[in-house]
Length: 146
Image (cartoon, rainbow, N blue to C red; front, side, top):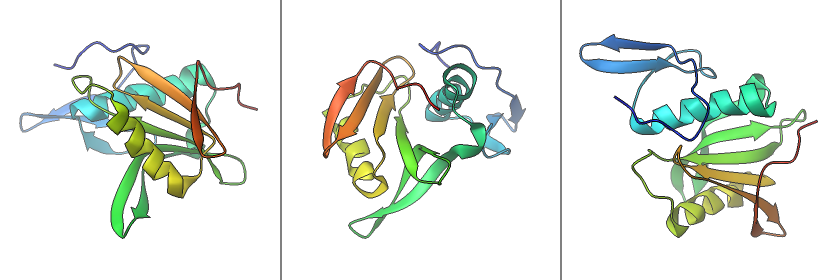
């Protein structure tokens, strides 16, 4: 049904209703229509929590923001102990190629969010950036969380 990703296989709770598949979101604790982008997002959530030490309770999914009067949503945002955003993530379906437009999209979101770290992923390719003085510097991995 959905493609194999370049992320550890997550133990997703999948159900089917009226010929549609749903996944129970680890963060939102409810069933969400399982689209190809949601497939990537849920695997990324599991990876961040299970393998990278991100606290589940500090992840926000589809975080609302306004840009030039338009309502936008960041796929994932991670908040520190003071509830300040530190990481922002943009997920695309595995069939969508990551381009400079994807980087521009997350940079636009981050102009409002002001996170230190950004990641774009289609589940196959992943690019991580550090935001230094409004410049996105590619990095190999996130620093260890404390």
